Image (tube, rainbow, N blue to C red; front, side, top):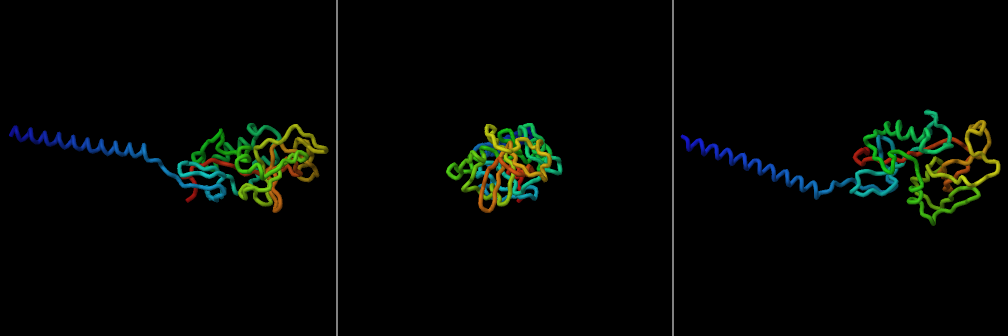
Length: 237
């Protein structure tokens, strides 16, 4: 009887040992696979049209299957007059109501958990680095008399026909123009007066015939196209 009990105990010990060893090996193999197997994501090319929360966006930069996020620019031109931001910026972008709105309320409307911070921004406007990367130097010329860049070529998803919208690119502050306003607050009636205003930040303006990044305008109305960095798994399927 005593030998029988000892045999049962040994069998139990052996079974437990095999069970523990088997699970340890499986866990070790899983860990090794995770270390040496990279997660892959969907690839995107600049100009691709995607949807986020039902809204359309254009991919700004190629994104490989190794990246978990993609940079997008809104397909829509947004007017913010309903929230009281209806005229062009006259001061520093970083401290502007526009920047505060985009980083707070606008980001929340998209879902902050879906956004990725890059270079200090989850939401921003078209900037100088975008210009330098997306517009070839041989495809534009600078006109100092008008403080504007005339583009011979421009990606269609950036220069949408018959539109204009604000950027984060500083204009020249060392130029003087005749009979031109430099502060939107100096214009008595921005909706109905005839005037020329020198912007603090360039607009991107496109027609059927021309593409320009210009600083002299006759309308102080503000339109924007937000640029966001978003996790790929947050995009609509």
